Amino acid sequence: MAKIISLLNKKGGVGKTTTTVHIASRLADMGYKTLIIDADVSQGNATLHLMGEIWNAKEHTPGLGSVFIEGRPLNKVIYNTDRENLFIIPSEKFNKMGESYNLDMILSNFGPKGYFSFKKLIEKSGLSEKLDYILFDLPPSLGLSVSAALIASDYVLIPFKVDDFSKNAVVDTVKTVLEIKEDYNEKLEILGAFVSQNDRRNRTNNKMIEEARVLFKEAGTEILEAMIPVYNKMTVLPRERKTVFDIKGAKVESINSYIDLTDEILEKINTHQGSMISGKRTEITLGAR
Image (cartoon, rainbow, N blue to C red; front, side, top):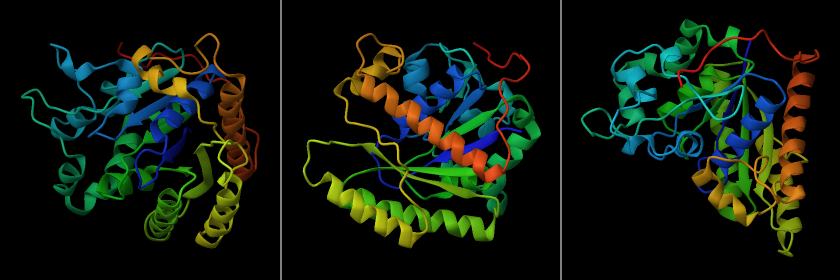
């Protein structure tokens, strides 16, 4: 069964999508069949990173919006990426008529069933039996689409920057996750929060991280050991549809940080499940592109 992980922080600009793409890419390189569900419909940055500007193409590319509006099966909007073992369900900023989507509003039309929409779709599609990992890239909010993703998830990861706004957002995010766990999804576990943009040159960084460590523990989570350093080349990677693993001359520290983060995540999942994580699965064909 696939492990389903939501990457979430109610505050934007914390490196959520970049981390999602890099963790998923590392898992894929390790031989795990990994799917990203780009549920951040308003921005679609994971889609942009892995598929390019599909919204500007002449031919409409069905994605998450088509699942809810047109009733397309989830497994009919899965696309291959340039990376082996990595697949994506893209966001759709616009429908065929050029009208923008509001995923929270769409799900609200389903009434209480909207909260369980992702869970039901994944179960009906049979994707959990075909994949090893499913990662939700979520919008910087705590709306209905986020709640639906959390109800469908096994685990949560919370990226944050070392500043007061981001720290406070983590506390609010943890509170929401724990409420979802109590009311709808008792299996949901927070793997931890992690520093997604660590500037070691900033003298106050270590002090603020220690303050965050105490704050997060009181809220109900912890800070992971692996930290992602600030790296200027990150901003050009989506344009080239690449990760730090793919570019020549990438900083070793940056590459190793994502490897360490992924390894720490796997170790935590393994510990939680109480059993060793298996290796590669049977070869299958998933992508439509």
